Length: 261
Ligand SMILES: [Zn+2]
Ligand SMILES: [Zn+2]
Figure 1 (cartoon, rainbow, N blue to C red):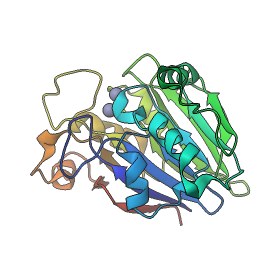
Figure 2: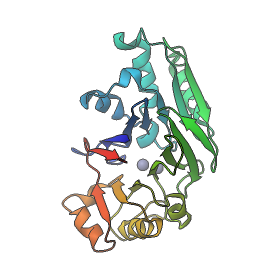
Figure 3: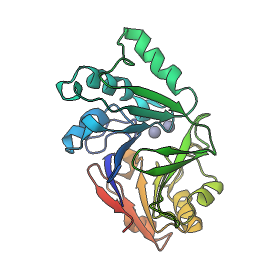
């Protein structure tokens, strides 16, 4: 069983109810933060999540509404009383260039972010590869049409063979049919759905794109996140139902979901 807490259902645009991208995922054996916006640093505490013992951070791409909290979080863990006794490592997974980006932040202010009370490790992952991540999960990656480095992730809880419970997080992406294959039969498929209709750019999804991927993937449930303010006042689940008969959930800050049985 995986538990998901939506910390930020919004975008880079300041919004009173939707902070920018961050999603907390945990199993019985570990925790993983999927993207770390500037807001995420305090949203974890607001939701009473055990940020002190966070095992890993996943960076999908380098837009600041997804990575802007990384250096501030490490600045916090370096100095917070709560983390001084921590010894277990924190792993930062991200696309190629993650270490360089964090290093640039670090050097800009001589913060010493890599010197923590506990070990930190940066693990850069390529598209179409897989690796083990904390929480007993297997991660697979997929290059999305958004930025050069942007990656979607598929997390599977293997628990002793079988197909396992799976969760797919697209983060920001344009539309491509191969994403449906990547998310095949996922128990929960969390997609960005930046726009309702007439999207202004090809590098994000609008509702018809998302519902097309939902249909083709065969996913059991869908969550739509990364919602621009143009969605304000729209009944997202009802609009989704007109295009796909499955179960679509609107992401909201603070929403908690269980994945698997
Ligand atoms: Zn974004
Ligand atoms: Zn982006």
